[in-house]
Length: 486
Image (cartoon, rainbow, N blue to C red; front, side):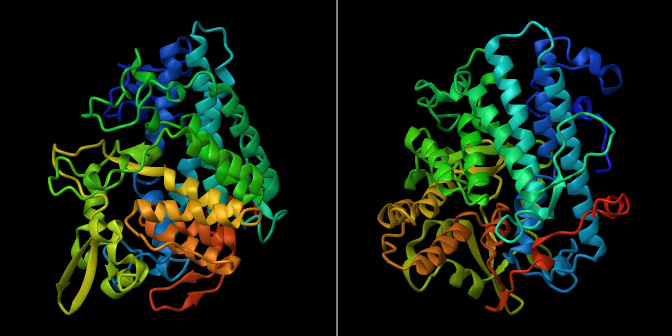
């Protein structure tokens, strides 16, 4: 791999609206200074999170952008403002697609480089508490695996179709030397190794595990997410915490078709009962100061919106120039005429608009209320519901009744009182995919589900795009191809 060697930590720290720690201006901070103290390591790790929250990554593009466009969740006019139409047609030679894809590749590998810089210095004899050293070490490993996983899910064939196919460079050193490609299985096994070590490090260190750590809204007196003595240990759901590591492991194991291991990690999150289902009155509340559109208590991990809180709103509130779904497509997606008529997601996330002979739905999931939002402005990364979906899929072959129970629990939490009841795995998987699509709409996960299952992508017309590598494997940036990686 052609190494993206830019050190971005100091620059990114200055962009954090949480003001984790006071730092020197970027031209006054050196790598040697950064790793001379515990606070320096904290700043370096916070810099990685801030980088990941950039609008070209999880702050916008990898959340509600490129993967969702590929999953056919939006309608675009031929001359759409932001140039996504050709991407929605799987035209990977389109200049707009190439520009976005290249930025994703470069920035993700730059964040990995900074994880590696932390990991190569973490064992230095710098005075640091054991808890903070374990947290920093564990989170850096977990971030490295999490980011590599998304690179693999975008730029390599799936394990289901090509387990020994060309994967991605799995970079574990901070160096300008070339890292050769790992095949798909090798890369996934390296992720498992990083995540397993991270899990071990964080099991005794992460404050979120303690019974005293109670998840909730910042204004709720019952919430105990900010009681830790230092800021670094607070709001653990805004970081790759212990349960988020379990959730990521569950994702990777399911991708590897290791269902028992996926189920065990999903159950660890579910059985902890740390993350409560969002109360109906909070989700549907008419008072915007009390309304929770993203079901914040259920987020196991989320990216803090550090960069441009108006970008997501603009994306969905720009009429025909923005991202929307036609009304008939939205009605079919949420099964309005059948079991989904009372689905709270359908009722609360979409606003019906009729103008210029086009009836469409505007997405409200990320709608911002100036100064009155009940929860921090975040992008969901891992939901409790996803762990139920993983547990359901992983359970089917050995315990279909339990699989149905997991799936129906999510449906009930969303106001769907008609249970899925079938003895057919095909029917069960069809229902699970439908529910996953409803739940994660505009969150960047559906494309990966289609790819893992080698399942055709449902188009807006009702037709299905075939499951092929031509669609599922994004081309590497041109300079990577020229460098001889593929």
